[in-house]
Length: 256
Image (tube, rainbow, N blue to C red; front, side):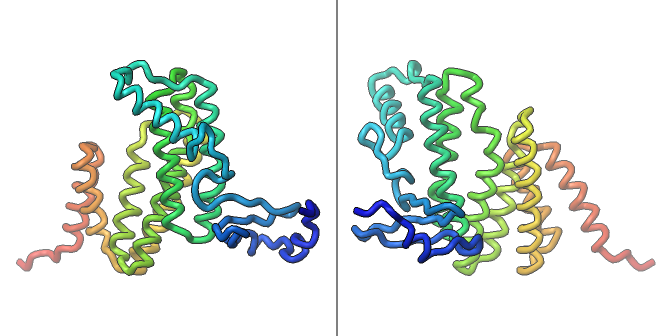
């Protein structure tokens, strides 16, 4: 095998508008390739992005899930915890999946983007519940608004492509509500991602409604239903006031 990849680089010049592709490897499996200014990165389309199998399993996350299940069967769930080194393994591994779902999103491979973002959201929950150090429990939470946004947009685009724009609108609204309901976190990254994600989702929601014609009243009534289900009573009261005001504005005055 010739380690020189000069010819490969020449055959695919760097172009920021054409920097990612999916190809078939020699054994027929699909892999993602990313052309960077200095070379080519390659990652697996399925399984762990770097192709490794830690502890003989697909990922460290799968391994620790199996250890949790074993502890549950043996009646030792209360003793199960993740030490700092194990959390670092999960953090580093989640970064690999993040790098892949970024490219999957770019390629508009919505189902696979949903798969990887759902996977990382499960890691967030797992670490938050079982990490023994408080700083590890909260370490990933700063990125939760961002990953919820990517997951929600991918789900919305998937149903939009299937011809159901109203389902897409509902998914985006639900994602906005989920982000709004996140507990506050005194962290600059969290605050940035929270504001940025809501702004991007609200812009998408406006675009979808303008394109597919959902009224302001329908939107407020949907959000009110969510607020009631989530027992967000202050938000529900605010929405009721806005709905009453909008209905009053839409109702013509009675003739004297």
